[in-house]
Length: 467
Ligand SMILES: Nc1ncnc2c1ncn2[C@@H]1O[C@H](COP(=O)(O)OP(=O)(O)O)[C@@H](O)[C@H]1O
Ligand SMILES: N[C@@H](CC(=O)OP(=O)(O)O)C(=O)O
Image (tube, rainbow, N blue to C red; front, top):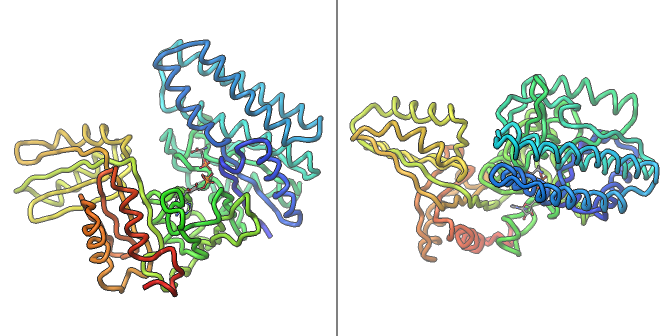
């Protein structure tokens, strides 16, 4: 059995957890395993903040303090998770070297007064680069052979769209040529930094927030793995985020298509691009709980969309905005093509689109972080007939489930439940696949909209018990 196992930030949040993860990996002694690991919980965010601070208000005392905190956190992790003194010392050395490098880079940002997306990716990559050697040393300490590698070492070559880099088509062959011999011949367990890749000319890139899931599925596809296991802090894919609805229920099986819809529309359980590499080869993805490993979890696989439930799950994205293009009396196809090529040129991530065509009214939902770029890209279209507006503080809610196709009245039920609860819907979108109905509301009504629909479709009950 060949398995790629990915451990997210919450699974390696401290030394105890890393030791627990190392023991978990050891249990699968007879398997060929590749381990992918994220930065310790909170570290990626703190690196982003530190980079911004060094750029805006450079301060060497802040940098010293920041490096001291990171050193403490990772030293504590090593002391607890790496029991063998030989591997412990090596891990301390690696961490020292990396943090020395990070300190110099942060100083450099301050001196130069320049923070590019390229340098931001380089800084952010330290989170994962610090953890992989620690987890690898913890595994070695337990007597399991292991080697720590970066995403670049493993063959994850990307374009240079820093912050949201795309793996190149040749990654599959490259990963296979680099990792397959480690598994088959060296019989070792590689521990690979999730989330990061490298450009052809050697610059470190990141694959977008939550991108370690994508690292795992790319590797699984390249190595023709039997399964991918994504270890998280929840029992699996639930009917919605348990932080919004605590009684959310576990979904034992879900199809690739449904998982893609859910993650595209914000369910933080999975990176939106993670399904594509495994779907082509029909490799099942299991979501499992690191801290409850015996629970069955959720399996994402082909043909798992035939269950009875109409709405299977609900998702929410809270940090979005809308750019609206409206007007009359022009060629509709022409202006659509102009709008989308302008957005594509600026690499704006379009989440959802709705349009009415009697006169043009095109509403485009984008990440909150992209709204100014999107607005500036479309503003030149204004000409007295066409107008461009932006709306901030928006949330997108999506109801996902293959059962919606062919069940009449689902959209009616959704909007009447929202109306009865006084929630104002700003924009609606439903694709022909009928796998999801998505709509936007104001940001402060997003969570309530999810709760209302969870109750309306009785998602806390099993599909057989639902009305
Ligand atoms: N539908 C959903 N099912 C399960 N978890 C969800 C869902 N939507 C959002 N989440 C959130 O996704 C998180 C995923 O777990 P986490 O361990 O943080 O993953 P990772 O560390 O890999 O990013 C959980 O904290 C949970 O609150
Ligand atoms: N550390 C990165 C990548 C990642 O995938 O993390 P996690 O597995 O903890 O979501 C991030 O925070 O975005």
